[in-house]
Amino acid sequence: MAITLNLPSVLAAHTGGARTIEATGRTLGEAVADVAARYPALAPRLRDKEGKPYPFVNFYLNDEDVRFRGGFAAPVQDGDEVTVIPAIAGG
Amino acid sequence: MPTTIASPPLTARPLRCRSCGTERAAAPTAICEECLGPLDPVYEAGRPLPDRETIAARAPSLWRYKEWLPFDGDPVWSLDTGFTPLVDAPALARRFGVARVWVKNDTVSHPSLSFKDRVVAAAINAAAAFGLDTIGCASTGNLANAVAAHAARAGLKAWIFIPDELEAGKVIGTSVYGARLVRVRGTYDDVNRLCAQVADRFGWGIVNVNLRSYYGEGSKTVAYEIAEQLGWRLPTAVVAPMAGGSLLSKLRKGFGEFLEAGLVRGQPPRLYGAQAAGCAPIVRLVERGADMLEPEVPKTICRSLAIGNPADGAFAARAMRETGGWAAAVSDPELVLGIRFLAEDTGVFAETAGGVTAAGALALARAGRLEPQDEVVLCVTGHGLKTLEAVHGAVPEAPVIAPRLREVTTLVEEERTWPSR
Image 1 (cartoon, rainbow over the protein chains, first blue to last red):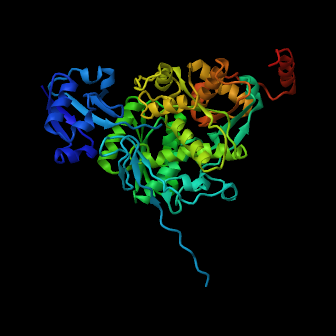
Image 2 (image 1 turned 90 degrees about the vertical axis):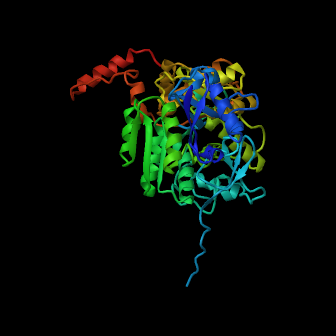
Image 3 (image 1 turned 60 degrees about the horizontal axis):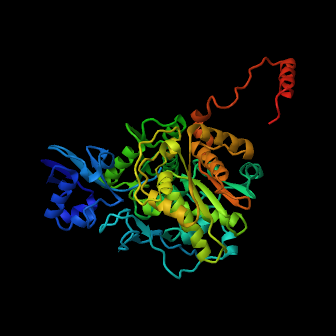
């Protein structure tokens, strides 16, 4: 299954400048693992040593926070768009 | 000819990652390139710090504490923000059953009537240091008002993004300054995500996204002012509203810096945070004793605190736990009552977040978290005229009469038969 991963510019240095990359997997966790294998410098920036998401890095699956969809266990399908956004706040 | 001594040009302090410790040069970025953690400004260790008398002789604005703000050189914009009144509130002390209560009254903050003037005063000077000509924000309302007002005064362009369903006061109170206001279908968390992408794409200074490291430091000035206005001492407890959660950790940092500088002595105050029950992810984090925040979809009339995914939630929870404080969530009817008793007891008319803080403090007092010997400061962060919708229908309706003395006499006689309050 091919999905699109949108990265913040702060991470593009680790993908040769690409801000949008393709990934495959049945779940978001598998897709992130796929990207981590192909871009080793990106791996520790997307997930911790145990393969879990960091508290301050948010993943959005088609504009929805994946924590409402089961986190890295969320199923993904062809054409899905995942956006990585470092945590920010304010009001 | 008199010689003028030129101030050094304004520059922003370098940054360090709160998570992994990596340092970087000053820049309009709030995210560590190594680990995506949040960046904080680095202050020069051993820099000369002013004493009480020096601070007290300076102009009454938040810049009287400039040594603890993230710049070198003198600020260029928003020089008159800060130093709001600390109001003694004996009726609130009786209501809570504690020794003393003061209201830190940011409802009269200059120029936009909320605490957010403090953070924007810091952020707009960061924008000046970086030569940015456009600033912006994702906002639940108060920040929108502040960014629009400060940008107008500085002659900067402003792009402001808010959820589509906000109170009229927040919407009109932004547009009136000539800002470019965009209403986004969704919650604040949707707006926030969009603004992270906007900051990344357009190179603007989004104050609570890529200028966040500098912006957040403005919050510390609440703590400095409380300490100075109490006569250079600390309260035993502080109650503050929580949206993103930043204020709680910045209060802790601010009190800690004044203790470290020897300007005050004693124990840092216990910090308490309040949220509306319809959006209380930080309160629930404290109650669970957990580290990982669980985001919520907000459902409350307190839109100014309706952040379901607060990035500083874990830091706020730590600040409360480690100072011996706690957290409280209150229902929408309770927060409306909070607005009313705060107004009746102190003469301070607060927006919904102030109602949450007042009602939250009452709940904490009833639960025994605030004790009879406590000296408590309530941080009341925004003016009630901004959220009239919340109290519409909850306050007594005014009678309409003909301009005749007899009708007033009737009303006065009716009042005599009411039970006293």
